[in-house]
Length: 410
View (spheres, one colour):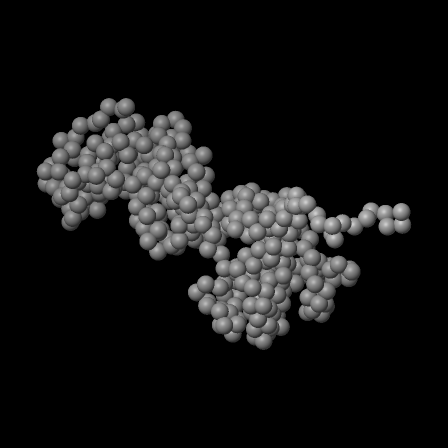
């Protein structure tokens, strides 16, 4: 551990409080190219790190409040010695001092968002995290995050969000932090988010809404009453179980209507890590739906959107939400429970109960067998029971009137 630097001006709260209130911090050198500053405020002072960038300049970063009035907690409130250690942490570049300014959480999220776009991932994962982070946490330097900071944030989410949603949000933040940690050796506190953002156990208990086929037909009919375009969007969601983001990316050329067995080439979702090698997958659709789609897309460019809003614009994320809620009400269902994803869940269960192999169900819905097994285990039990029952051996002795000769003519 580096030797601490003494300072009669800064190391005690009594000495610091004798300094005049000023915007410019008082600095003391604590390592080559690294200084620790103290800004005297009307309330508790602020500790500031100053690090040389190796190009004749330096950068500064506030690293915490001083323990002028409250006892240090090692996180938000630091004493002089704790502040020194934080400043040194930020100054440890590849060759000691002379490194770039350390990234804050908000910059880690920006970096992760750019990486997702490059890899064809879903940047909405980042938006979900940003919406739940306080400004103070967004400004926190990644290298200075503690497990206490992150655990408090995660537990706060759990007060208003379902455990599975908390896990998804925390996983996105964890991915962003891991990404920037890979490229900055000053970030040596990965354990902070490994423990602070630990997964909430048993959060994947399925609460998916499964609709009877009759109700699905009512919802589709209600969607068509709003507009032909929205009806097509909802009917494809019901028939294929595709996610709204997949439906919005369908192109005219993805429709194969001139076949005895019409189908859609459904684009892969952007869920999961990395770019998926299979970009489109064939899904069967009824001839009646294929015909309606062909009429709707007539005269449109092959690479144009297959599904359009009544305004002639392509569907965007969440454009369907309010319209679908109206269709749900018209079908006599509860909008607090039934969203458009109920059509996806219902499609998966419909195929399982029709004895479609689980592997095929997973492929058709662009998900994994493990996810199907975890989320729809109850229906898989019904599915496997039906398959096994057809092959059961009945050892009961057949009665005389049930004996049928193998060769009736002998």
